[in-house]
Image (cartoon, rainbow, N blue to C red):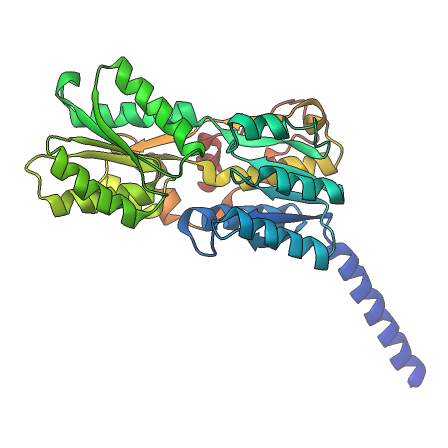
Amino acid sequence: MFKIIGRVLLIFLLVTVAMGAKAKSDFSVLFVNPSVSGEPFWQKVQTITEQTASQLNIKIDTIYGEGNRHIQLAELKKYLSYRATPDYVILMNYPGGAEATLDLLNKYGINFITLEQTITGPERSSIGMPKGRYKTWLGEVYHDNYDAGWRLAEALVNDTGLAKGDIAALIINGHYGSESDVRSEGANDFFAKQKITVHQQVHASWSKEQAYDKTKKLLSRYPNTNLIWTASDLMAMGALTGVKASKLEHSVAIGGFDWLGDAIDLVGNGGMSATIGGHFMMGGWALVTLSDHFHKHPFWVENSSLTFRLGVISRQNLDDYRWIVYSPDWSLIDYKAMSLIGTDKVDYGFNLSQLQRSAEK
């Protein structure tokens, strides 16, 4: 009797160990969310990154930078001091804090990928390029902000239906010296080429409330404004509220970045003219490349960057992208199919039409 019980227990233990071994992750990644928990855009980035990790058998932890370079560095130090060192880190550098952050990762010898090109000028010269001063900096995953700023401006101009000489624009940026400046550079160059008047450019720190306040003040100063370009959907929504509060007698074309669900709905009901985005996929895409790196694919040995183009959602193509709002189950996307392992491809085909096809399966 005792022998039978012993055998049963032994079998149970062996099965449990086997199941545990099967469930063990291939490797670990720390994802540094630069914002606060629940912030619409970065929460979507985080959710998609975690879904990708689940499909690719990756252990993933998340910490938060809370929108501040000092807090992000402190949280990263705390994690690396008291937790098991991850195999990889995915993070976005904050202007003014890049060197200290990369020095810390270099100290621990951790391979890492950065999201978005947020560092410019002397700070960029100091940290250099991936695989230079920081050997474990595998590369950068980013979109072309200049191109995106240009194309958003173009979409807004087209939506006004006005002659170029009749358009008067405002530009609302995010932070000083960040990627929003590159976005606005693209917009400014487009407006200049089209000889469109830009009354003023202001910064609203990515804040819906600041965008609202500044829009009201600017419209009292420039009441003939009929186009407002913004560097984020949240600021676009703030600008829209500001336009309504100003009770103008003409319509205003408004657009932003991020493809937030509310912004896409506003494009549908006429509140906004366009939103440009798709970059919420960048964490998931970065994780696909890290899985390939872990399994010895040479992409990050042979390359130091991976760029992709954002997409514009306007009233003309809105129906093609409604799944982003109404199909929130990001596990429907086949992240494994994006891998280069077992293929003869040398470059990733990350694009938004690919995502749409995946989501519709």
